[in-house]
Length: 281
Figure 1 (cartoon, one colour):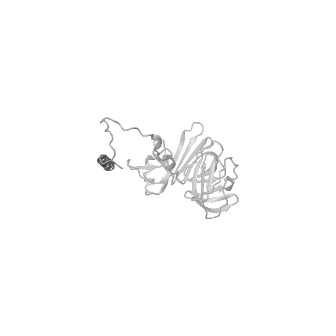
Figure 2 (spheres, one colour):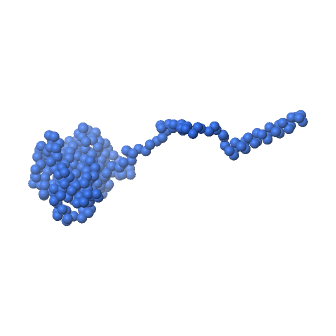
Figure 3 (cartoon, rainbow, N blue to C red):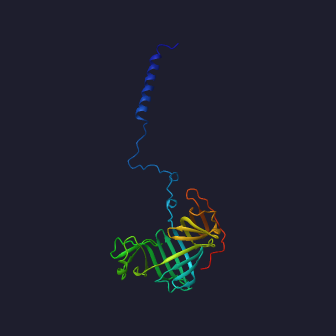
């Protein structure tokens, strides 16, 4: 039995407790204010995840980076040995002074290509050819803009304005430029590539080519790509394929990957150089 004198006390405590609980629920907890010059506590940077900018970059397709040495020459045709097979350059208007002491550096980036002919001894450049869609320079009058492995390059038309007048913006065009980035010639320059072997150790060869199989002959798969038909030796690791089947070839250094389906890659990697069995030109 509770004594009468205690009941009011218990009732008063209950009212106070309920009042405190309502104040907490409505206003939230009360904390001491920070001084005006106080700085927020540092956050742990290890908890923050930064986006992977490298992984998000897309590699161009088609994309080729090769070095080649002069193997044989014919009228208007130069056969080059590269780490992955034979690269053939042909032209009716240039390529007339290539020698065994020269090296060719070759790049393809989507619709653009660059051919540098340099001396093996010191790497000094003898010729540079730029190819791609005709793109007028945006800031400099009488100029054209090109992709190069060192970034976009603006070239001056020079004395070739009359010959360039036959081309319209977007037309595929090949020009030769000098060290002052002035166009000194307009040429027809084609190339053919045979991928017949895995690159040797230390190679910096790079290839990304996608297309469809257009023909099968002996050990070679003829791959129709945006840059033309490329012959691929099946011995580099090409699985069984059929005419009309999509195929992508990727080469980075000694790593060769052949994908038959972009959505579900079926690849075989080779890490030991294989002898070339490409037919002689």
